[in-house]
Length: 226
Image 1: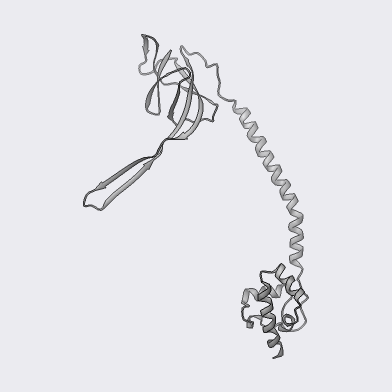
Image 2 (image 1 turned 90 degrees about the vertical axis):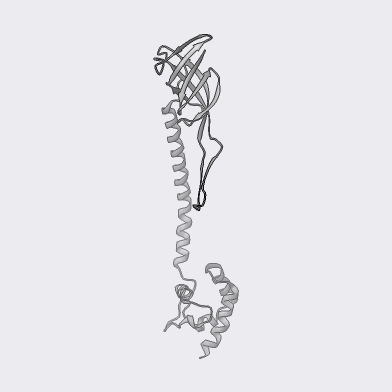
């Protein structure tokens, strides 16, 4: 038995187990879709035509693949008008396998995948992702707290007295000076007395390199004498 169906503005002659590409229809791979626009059906020389569709006729098909057709380019040029227009179109296609040709209002024996089952699987997946995210956040929380605690405690104890203007040191801008002050470094004398161990500590916890800090220390030695 064959049938002539209409979908996506086109007509197709189909039979059971035929594989064809039609314009996109909604559905996941493995779903059963129904095509109710049956223009004609028949077997051999006996053909029945609809007006325009055959009453009670239905064709079901299994979704095999969702994809796209090749890109079609439309190029239009107008002579002496400096007008050129290029438009591309790529049609979405669904590959289906014809499952059944049903007549007289018969019900399909193959039904679309149960939506309830799909929803259950989706909910389970969302719940699993949420649980994994919560676990990750719970593991990361102590690390964040520890890091925040480390950041809150200055690396050095600020000396008493008026702070120096650290921007006088070449290479130390307002932002860098503010960062040094936050870590308890406020005077030229303090920078001049930094040991190699102190410099390594600053290099580890602050966005300054060992070479930068060493250069600042040499400049601070001269400034501290003034």
